[in-house]
Image (cartoon, rainbow, N blue to C red; front, side):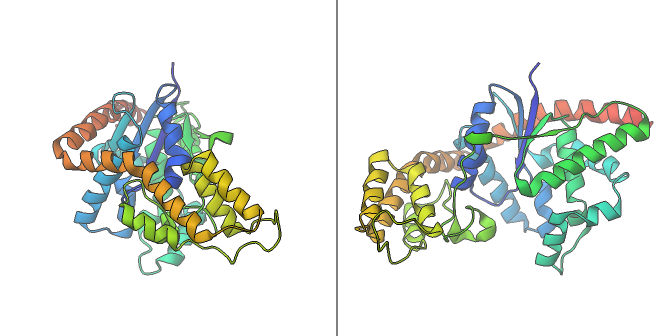
Length: 329
């Protein structure tokens, strides 16, 4: 029997190259090896109070991005979180054994409370409990997580064990972190430091559905320096980032050309960034076209969401029926 893997992403619009190389590319491979559940976490996004128009638009864009990146609705359960309302019922049950002190100690809660001091809502506090419900509703064996999410996965294990202890059952197993290991490629941002991501600003990331002219403008603004002064000089971090970006979207001989130019102190960063921008445009073109086609076909995208929701609800309904019985309802 295949092991179950679960992963979700908040609906904040198009996914970027960091998402693709960081996880999505591996998710495509996992569809044949695991029983996979991938979802758009629209309930989670409510902690920041998005307006209804943005919530719907961004949820659909993320769903289209998933499909464009290679997830096959026939091979996995690809769904929108709010289409599976059993998650909310399990969230309620788990909240009954989640304690204020442990929720307040969450690093993510502390960070978010600092970032949005006027909106420290109960949903933000219990965010890890909803994540636990997402995981446990399908009895996931593995959850691909980054370092910033490991504490939330530990909370899911804590709540699973606490439920078992409280009701004297061995119902929920402990979900484990899935580590892609050497397969995981970390994509740097355009600002010269850190990884590519929206939290660092829109200008830091290149998105799968981004228009060519926007890509050109962003790449040309990428951080560089005045160039090397000695042959084979060590690259500073910002320059390493530019070369790392080129290594994932350009042809090997293109990368070799600019490596040689750098090592011989003949590098022209303007030329390099122009080439990088065109290679990024070429690399993202199939994703961009597929995303636009999917978004233009509303009925087709609705059908994909409905198929994924039906698969997810079968699993979720079984778990909720069993949990209700264990609790005594």
